[in-house]
Length: 220
Image (cartoon, rainbow, N blue to C red; front, side, top):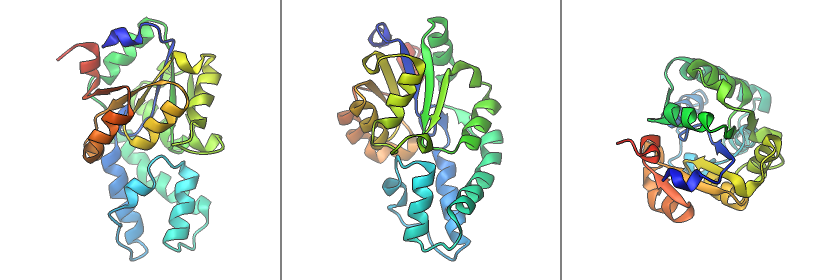
């Protein structure tokens, strides 16, 4: 499968559920956060906010759940709730480090395109010791619209100095896959426990589907 990447000059990763195993914690945080207001977590919440930027998600929570706190207070609370988990509990997806090393040895440009907040992203990359692999880290709050709009992927490619068609994208949810495809990039869907119910949708939308990065490297 690595032959597919032979003509690519850059690889761009989503973060949560794609490069790191962290989607489990966001459901926990949503349940705990809404519980502070005496609210239960709706079953459709994760699907509805899929791909939204950190700010867009805060706006959605404030409007849907009638939360009186400011947007900055909402985002600050989420950041505080997540930082310890990112620093001490979140791990890389299987084979991710080996793939980063493989791409680095081939001098491929690498970037992050995430819907997460900057403080959380930095904490995660630093704690895992992989920040140095990426020439560009961009959050969806830095572009006009979050995923499924292609804005964030186009920005990362532009900042890396690579044409979109020379980029490969790694994503774990349909909104992100759609964003990568709209940007004109080759998209790999990465399996994640959180998005298993969407597996068939992911396979149809993406160019390739991988169970983990070992599979991509031909290591089983």
